[in-house]
Length: 315
Image (cartoon, rainbow, N blue to C red; front, top):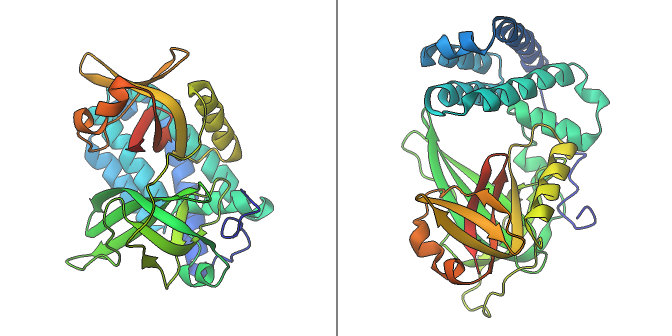
């Protein structure tokens, strides 16, 4: 992967002003104190807090220029309120945040790829201008999935692409503020002749699309990409991603020879060995999308998380 153009943008500088860095340092000190209090009083005290408590903590992190941390604290509050299995998940998130506070203290000592993961977890990404000046990965990019969401006054759109020749999978982020419009609009399953650059990281997944891309109006039938051979291989893939960065919360995957099964109105992914993992619908009408795989094995592209997978496309 590292030998492909567009996938090794690890030397991009981060333009962080002195005032912002000071605010971030202060925020990390506040966060560490909060986490110490949570662990000393136990998870029961965390469960007793109203959702406004977590929102207030999130606002403090935003004031300290730590948007990424703020989002993670919001997620903890929502987990406690809505997930029956929240204790294990919250402990994992608290541990990840605590590790972030200690790593941020010596961020410049880490290799560039891991340094990028630390900054990304804080909510800081390499500048689009710097990335756009780097050589990219030229390919025919298939648009396979799109998610819309909003955060306060910001609407965001996540669009996933598959490189038909390279086999690379990445997502493009787009934002619309207030009543503004998104910059990009892509038709589902359209193919683009484009050059992209991956944002730096230990396991690159976010992309920047360089100017000059064009839609391919006529393309040959799209063949299923090659991928992991079974769920054991997918578990190893996930473990490798976590080993490369403990702050990774999801990675894209391609897996072959799988079927979708339904049990008690829930969907699961299974392979020829009989292993099974839970699957989140991610907004799909699964009964329509997976009619084929309910009958016979297929190839799937999706997003892998610690608690299951979200499907994007299937052959």
